[in-house]
Image (cartoon, rainbow, N blue to C red):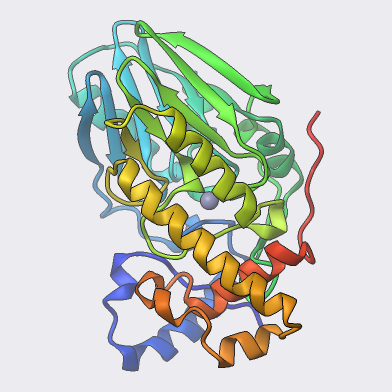
Amino acid sequence: MIEFHWMGGKMTRVMKSKRAALRSRLAVILSVALPVCGGLRAQDKDFSKVEIKVTKVSGNIYMLEGEGGNIAASVGEDGIVIVDDQYAPLADKIQAALKNLKITDKPVRFVINTHYHGDHTGGNVPFASSGSTLIAQDNVRKRLESGGIAGNGSSLTMEVKPAPKGALPVITFDHDVTVHLNGEDIRALHFPAGHTDGDAIIFFPKNNVVHMGDDFVRYGFPFIDVSSGGSVQGMIAAMEKVSTQLPPDVKVIPGHGAISNLDDVRVFVKMLKETSAVVQKAIDQHKTVEQMKQEKILAPWAKWSGEFLDADKFIETLYNSLTGSKGEFMKHN
Ligand SMILES: [Zn+2]
């Protein structure tokens, strides 16, 4: 009934013949999955073997990769600010990796969530209980608190359980918030209705780094959570606005994938605009989603097709986004 594909390198390398079996097994496992942009729910994953890789991005900004969304960290004399926190079972390893930099003994004072999905907020409880203050856009708190449905409005659908109180951001903002730490004005800016309706992009202006959350990812066709107020139009608008305003040599941390630059963002936006135009044209010709799939209207963008979102699922996503036929947009506080 509910089908959900695990995005990521491990599964993209699975032999085609094994895919069907794996897929049906995952469908069962994930029938009540967390809203992850690329993952199994936390309790079904083996986190014991996950290692946290730390990469210096620029100045005192680091990127941490483990499982789930990329983490950005500002590490300096005032302490540590991180953007997103992956999954709860990884919190100790993340703390250890930050300590290992031997830059500061001060704690993670703030965690900023780029959006509410579980592979970006899963560590909220352990970080909050060890003293970090959680910050996010208003709708992140609302969606974490209420739970609901995440997905593309069609075949990609996941039930989201309400998060415990300890996972809820204590400080929320409507449009933007700035954290003044380590000599930098770290700014979280809300972009409406992109990947979700609670997205924030985080700017580190002194270090010339930006964390895009899942408005920009490197795993192929992006997951747009139409069921949680996301839209392709909003994602395009956010990326165009950001890429015209940032310095050309800014270092871009995507929600998932390797450190990127603005050219990578432009290629991504170009694909979003072209595929949207093709689907819009088919909508104008009164074609059904099934016809669009049969005619393989996204075939020219086949290289963007991944295990998490193939062309058919992206057609569904774009159709639902462009017709506004699915999803619910929450009004801010
Ligand atoms: Zn996400």
